[in-house]
Picture (cartoon, rainbow, N blue to C red):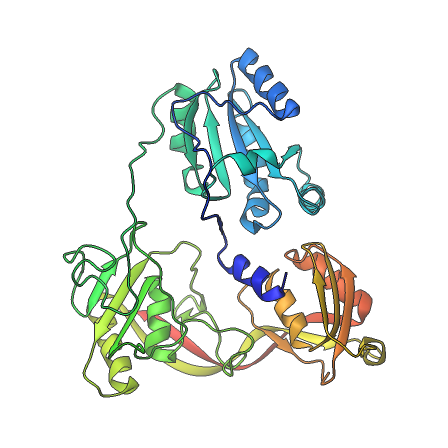
Length: 415
């Protein structure tokens, strides 16, 4: 597998699984999977105790699954008298190794069971995915992470209905046509105002272009399922997101700063919107001015762009390490898993891409090695665990240090 494929999966944050022709996990029916003896023993034991069960499905490629483990540990501790958390991992060559790494790192007491047939047999729309079983082994709900909250647990324990399962019919979206016109992507009356600014809902599609520019299909711009800060970045920076391969990387700070608190705006809880506008053929200047006016009409921020020294992570070469990093091979090679890297004759930018897997903040990653020749990379590490990757890089002569450099910064201030 190529690193670009892994990175694309990572950026989705939650692993989406499509195109399955498998059995559904049906609410109200008895959990009937019987091929895993260890799982069957645990479920039988919990039925005997009269304790409810939440089966936590995870896989080696689901970063969110592993980052949720401390929360699942806390849930087990808090509700230990009423609920048993059972971790069921999709069996492959990496999953156990990654789980044990996280178990050690967070001092977890939860144990995991591994199985492959279950994941082949049943429809699992996304991961993390949770199956809620009552004390008789009846499936009460299947959910994602949003339902792991106090109200759901209290209803689950009391025997009340914990979720109403409505059938959601996904509405089609054609990127070449205007959003919300003639039912494209949703109902025509769903807008807040026109250009169209609308609240995003789960039955709508996602469209997240890098840059503010007209569509190739016409003089319109649209983006679906974005945050307020994304909209302001389009309007004042011309970009909502970028990668290490884009020319603006390291020149624009990726997170707007809120004036007053002088801290990055927290985008972890996303208040999602969709925006679409159609304008005369007057170039991107009018487009940027239009979106700024629309934002000023609805939201209560003023925005400015300034140059400031901002924090960043700099990749450096440890003294005398360049000679041993230099590639000894004639041909490129890419061989990797989620726990090991074996690359030959690659650019130093490949290391930046690797470090993107283990992002723990919004600071840009800057190449300050001065290496302009192909290198070889051979090490073992959990590639989305920052500490593990940095320790491995130090072993081959590279390091990551916290630094700062001048960048353009979007400042937002409440009116």
